[in-house]
Length: 303
Image (cartoon, rainbow, N blue to C red; front, side):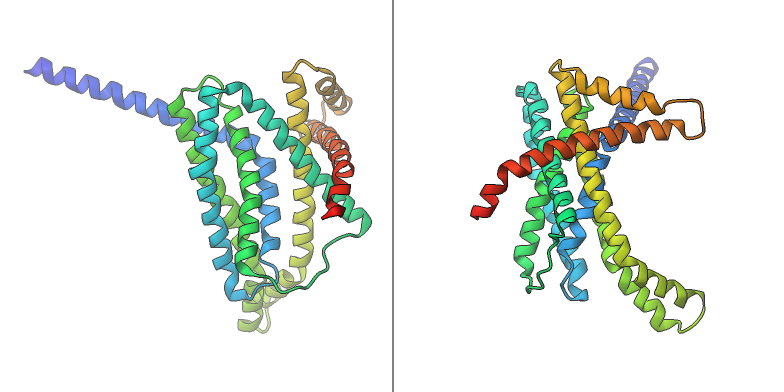
């Protein structure tokens, strides 16, 4: 009996060790996947606040909540099952999907740059319909979420199906929480500043409230600009790595050459080298995106 008990305890120990290793694998895979998709996450967080602008303050958080719920449904009901099925039945399709996403991000980023340079920002003050706005935001989220999930999946070569599935679920939930938590904080920041000014007429807290209200417009513009850069950097980077995957090595070699120019033994050299690579990828994304924007311009005008 004692030998049977020890055997059972030994089996339990093995199972526990295996489970612990699996958790470590999932955590490591989730961290790697999240890091690779960071640029698209930044873009997602930068794009979403614009959908809330123009609505009464009491509707801001409910709208963010509706968009976040739609984002979760996008990921868990459609995107994650689809990419898992592809990874099992047609893994060769992952890179073409990444290329399509890279082209889309490059196009979106280039279009925003063109709008900035031409002064073509939206100036309409038309009354918004909440349901239509939420639906539009969820559609945009679907594209960005699909790109995030495909990028995440591309980091999991050699992982078994269960690890891939759990990792994608973890990444999907965590990224949704981070993005829409950040959006909620951003859209309510001015209300918080107003609350501080109202409650504290003088002193440091009142000054903090005034500072928040004054800086939020600039912050939102900066966030939008960073989101545009992230689109171009991620889009261009995807296309460069896809070219390498299909044995066209020149873009990757040129990017490494740009990094080599600034490489050296000095403080923050690693960061500067990374920025050089990101800048090169961004230029590639801008050029390709601008070509697409010019190509589709006649169709935009016809609509």
